[in-house]
Image (cartoon, rainbow, N blue to C red; front, side, top):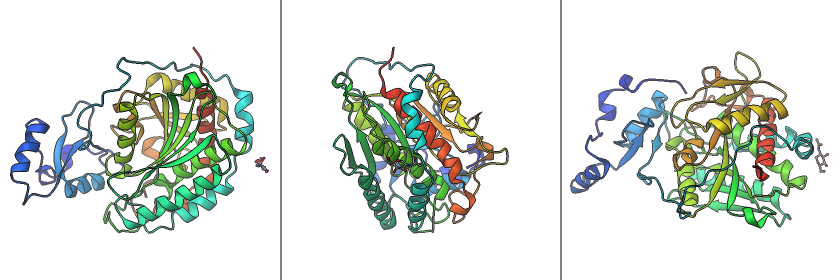
Length: 379
Ligand SMILES: *[C@@H]1O[C@H](CO)[C@@H](O)[C@H](O)[C@H]1NC(C)=O
């Protein structure tokens, strides 16, 4: 991932862009649709109007390291069935250290190693490939094995219009007054080879196999040590992040429309690579909820064994953006300062040997702290 201004992209890569309003453009395009490639509506800035482009143009953006949201399915913000606006209370300081301690004490790197070794052996986890469809079926089985026998924990497929589903594991809350509120910890399960997206080898060990196993281990420890939250807590493994946050947008829009209230969402995308400046937890400060991000700093101070560093990653750089877009507080932890992060991502070189499982475990600690602290009602 690197920063590139769009002006560096060839004009032809963006030639499909239409300057008229998106809906007018869509109508125009339908008139000529039989010969035209399918166009997607792409947004790469909070204040930049979205543009129509082809799948080939999207792949050019990927190779250029430009992050974007593909908002074709969700051009307008969803309307909550809640009707009125609701603002969650985000605390300033951690308070449940005694409750969190045993969950953190039970974290190990053993399961993370096993799961990531198998997970990176799929040829690719590209969301539209048969390999990606297989990898999600394998992953959900591992998650189901963890939850097996715990009645207040469920594991569900969230189906999409492509073959790789997203996965949602949920702890029911014990306080019925809070059953429509929830806390979400997320990562993305898909990977991509930027040179040959549909079938090129893409181990995706760091991006985002590392986040996948980071939250898997947090979930495992919570389940196996009797976590019984006040409000519901969910763990999400999204499909299609690399194609413009497709899976997380589908989930966030559905939740918003269903009137669910998301108190807070934490994304873990790339947690395994130790950058040149040593072991730190990168806390992203742009395009995130400020109050929640301040609380995240406090969580790192309380629960991680390493310090944090503040960093920026640009617009729509991971799935937390899909929650922000529908109006819920979200935050993002990453392996290092952004400039210091793994340069092998999106290639055949994104492999386990470059990663540290102890580093991933530090992020599991923060994820556990996040889940437990925010599962309590405070105000
Ligand atoms: C984690 O908890 C399980 C079940 O209580 C126990 O068997 C295991 O030894 C614990 N592992 C660690 C590292 O504490």
